[in-house]
Image 1 (tube, rainbow, N blue to C red):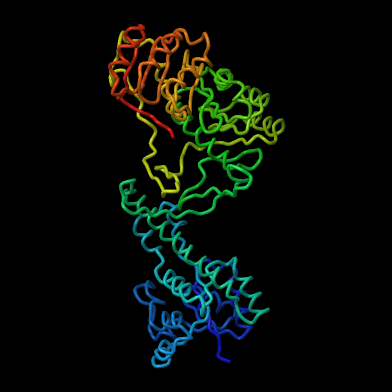
Image 2 (cartoon, rainbow, N blue to C red):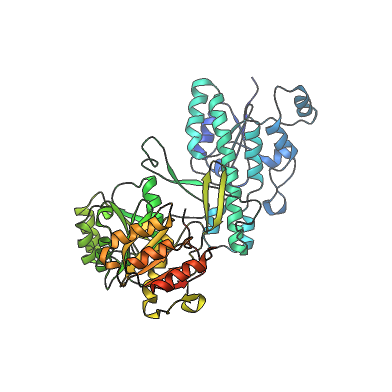
Length: 509
């Protein structure tokens, strides 16, 4: 029986010594180099140096070790192809039956803040080649890219005398996934260092994703779900208490984080339900802001998600503990308040937002393909950056701007009615803008009189403005841009409603 030969070249040496020893005890010849060879020698495990196999010393300061026909040929030779075996025999190439390899820790080095020169030196070339070659020829060569697979390989060798076809296939796919993620990590790391991060206009987008957290289930229990992160990224929040997160929780949390970012200039609270605001308000304290926000739609707030722009103090946590909520997210919590929430509401998911985000752009999967767009928060309108219709109302600007933010966070078509830094009614997700107005007015009731109204997009007809005016709305902010803008403006003038055209649409589909 021909001696089987394994090439071991690993950066992460976890478990490599007992693995190599077991292979050697099974009669395998071990080939290795550099640090791996040294570790094996120190453990008393005999191995053949790569340099002895190739006839070449390590070159270029170790950059070139395994890049040689004697190595590549031994891995890529198809044992069932006479022409390949003739080349092997003619050139005296030793066959390699197993490749055990993991790569230079580029991600770890990139996270450490290394400069460009160090990043480049930690880009693995030989290891990538070994893994891809072995994975390509998995029918004849076992590729082992992860220490976690050592025991499986050894168990099958003990039981079967070889590694099964199913395991070879799985390991090959795992190796290709590892090299793909490694390349994506390099792209992201070098883009960050060089300051050349690509945008939606790039023809090719490299996106490597790893599982960060298994979710309870998808939108519905029959759907599985996982939260994925790109290379060099961490979760922008920390869970401090409560049940594990679900797919829907992550979607709702996204709306709460966006709202917290857009409202960050003031002490505010945002209540989210089904990915869209159902109430928002400012306040002197986070507790006051939350109670005011909840009053916009207390029915929908039941089981909702609450985002804060300020630290949740003990009084705020007492208020939250009296509600049934799914998630609370804030920049921080008083320790006593956090303990109170954990004890009184053990299922409440309590998150601390670190203030960051994962992607600078937005991806969305569709049946037609993947959509990609810039995901910057919308630029805020200014009194001098638009056009007033009718009598200007600078005294209502703060409420107009607050309403504009809430409409921008809400699902289109979206209308927000605001007074005193508090939402009174929100019409969102309607297919007709006038219906969104009517819903918001219905929620606000008599409080609409003297309040302001914000629209995420233009009024296509005068009816939305007419209904708002009939409810007593004093001022409207909307982007304009309709073919009937003049008809809409005339309706505002006729009703005595001040209207500001911001020129900025904020659809959220």
